[in-house]
Length: 126
Image (tube, rainbow, N blue to C red; front, side, top):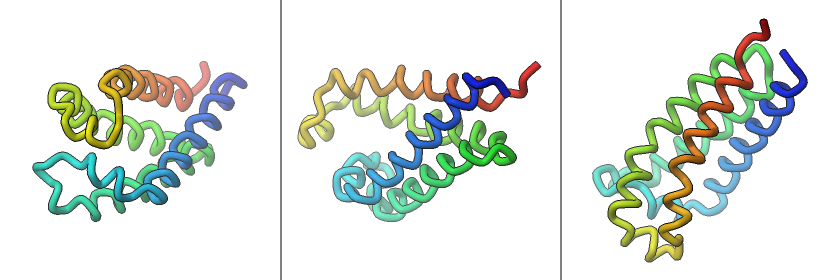
């Protein structure tokens, strides 16, 4: 794999592990963002998300696990896009938490860019 891919994989691994740590240390905040359809399971959802984010991050840093990183990151990020869109359309919860609507709006293209980055970073060199 190219140097650029290695740097990107390292950055993505660090990003996902950091996100897992932030989720673990700011649990109440992130539990409040769980969609109302599954809010009764918010603690479990957050626990699973914390473990998943950390595991995805580690899989970016361990080359044999890069295919898992690619798919897991895609599933995690694509799977949370509907919630991001819902938060944009119904900003009451995020505004109550002090998150400006403009930041919520940036989340959607950021998630798409991270998915693209994950695929580029983990593809086999030609």
